[in-house]
Length: 272
Image (cartoon, rainbow, N blue to C red; front, side, top):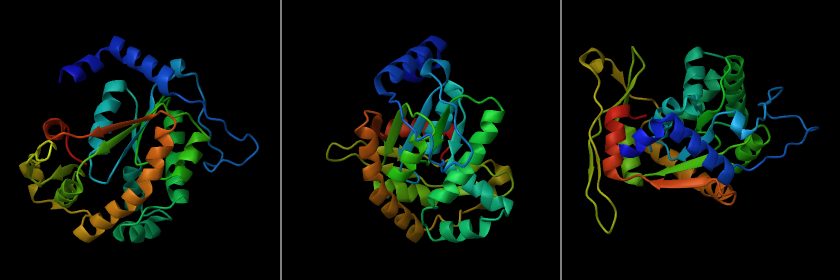
């Protein structure tokens, strides 16, 4: 809690920014003549001292990327852009690719680079038009190809990689619920894993909805055990090269989430 309080002070935030920029920002060169996979959209490259943070959050499905990223986005005054939310918004809109996305999501497969880039490009364009500066990306990039594409349009300062045991991830995903009326996320799983062999205990109380939402809870179509396990398998297969990619650039910061801190955040911020 003391650490969170320190980060909330403007002077501390400025100090953190300066440290991050000086130690981990790596200039990315782009091919001026090649067409951008983001179409005609190009993020304006700015000197780090003239913009806000540009971070990426990595982690398996269900690890809590959205929880941590949304809290930090409020703290630092930058938008939290979750590609999973962008996909769900497109699914709900009945847009031209909604049917294709439905099949991909229900099978637990990863959405193609082309679709994700199209949705992200649209979101970044809208943000720039509103004067947004900086961002925390959640769910993108997921492959080295996506990371190279992102490098071609902007500079990433820091990559935060969150970790939890697979058994906990499965339990969290199976406990997720959404209110069919208000759209808020809740979790009915009660997780209590005893610490052993040097590993910390992991305790997470359920995040239950108010009585007005209780009868309206629905389970996401992709939150079945079979689909969750397949999503984790695919993620683990793809994640190592991406982690190495950012680790070699000196930008990767890894966190094995301990139970007490995880419970503190989950109980106050909400799970995603």
